[in-house]
Image: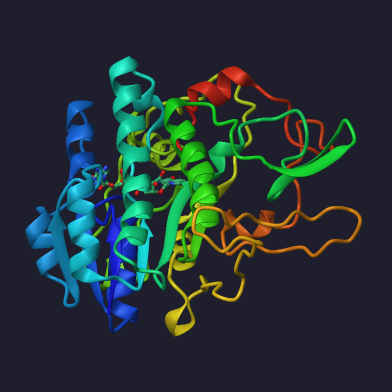
Amino acid sequence: MSILLTGADGYLGWPTALRLADRLDERIVCVDNFARREWVAESGSVSATRIEEPRERFESVDNLSLIEGDLADHDFVFQLLETHEPETVLHAAAQPSAPYSSINGERALYTQRNNISMNVNLLHGLDECGLDETHFIETTTTGIYGAPHFPIPEGGLSVDREGGSDDVPFPAMGGSWYHQTKSFDAANMRLADSQFEFPMSEIRTAIVYGTETDETRAHDSPTRFDFDYYFGTVVNRFCAQAVAGYPITVYGKGEQRKPMVSLEDTVETSRPARRGGPLRRRRNRHLQSGDPTRGDRRPRRNDRQGRRRVRSRYRSETLREPAQRGRRAQNGNGKRGVPRPRWRAATGTRGGHP
Ligand SMILES: NC(=O)c1ccc[n+]([C@@H]2O[C@H](COP(=O)([O-])OP(=O)(O)OC[C@H]3O[C@@H](n4cnc5c(N)ncnc54)[C@H](O)[C@@H]3O)[C@@H](O)[C@H]2O)c1
């Protein structure tokens, strides 16, 4: 049995790999194409922390295997899944920078091709390899909610229209070419859930800050810390600027309000259910329909006449600081509701990408 961790060389991937290696007996198969290292170099920057060369980094930890490969390549993904038959796929690989994806059309297309291809390859790969028990977990972003003019719904929107009603997914108001990739992934996972057997979860993560976890300290192996315009997330960049004595680069009117989450909480929340981790499979929440043929299983709707509600095994979770859970964001006047939308701010996402 193994766990497949994609994007394992990344900011979130590396501390996640260390935590899984330290807490689980299963082999952790780590995959990355090291593109993040190239993007940051291409941007003329460097991680503030010392990052070991990939081989050195992964070989220093028992229980981790490293496979270099491009997850946007269908054949590579199929071979990977067929060989390792993972019981969990933790998908954290992505081009995650909104500003990078917005440099020009070429970067926008690269970001969309890269991210969406990986998601589709993994979903179809699991199905084609018959891995019906494998739990697929993808790290995505709260950024896909965008900044609507109403409180953001958890799950879907109930729409009543011309005598009919339905639950409509609400994930697709991302404000950058990168965020749209995660909206596509969410829509594709919803579709995949209606067609494929395996359970799947999506973790919508807020903007992550922090440099260390227990394991990065114990192994003396830090994760990367980027502070540049393209790849530094907002809190990390503000801290770097403050330490270096530079003015903090506040964008727009400085009125943006964004959810944040620590690196420690993010890594802990991504841990699969075994050994007490928080993410559990939902094997018992099967979708049913009158027609058992694959590809035609559709969820029954929850209408107001009291028909049976079928819960999907697919689920999304929003991950943000514990203090913010259960309470809506307050707008600038201290009133309940989401902050007034600022399209420009959301589009630029210059305060840092989640
Ligand atoms: N960092 C945050 O604040 C934050 C917030 C919300 C969501 N997320 C999401 O979490 C995930 C990880 O983010 P991160 O900040 O660690 O990013 P990251 O760039 O540091 O890590 C992603 C890793 O994926 C790898 N990768 C990209 N394309 C690949 C491909 N085609 N094949 C193989 N490997 C590939 C990169 O080389 C990199 O190491 C992403 O999905 C991101 O959208 C991050």
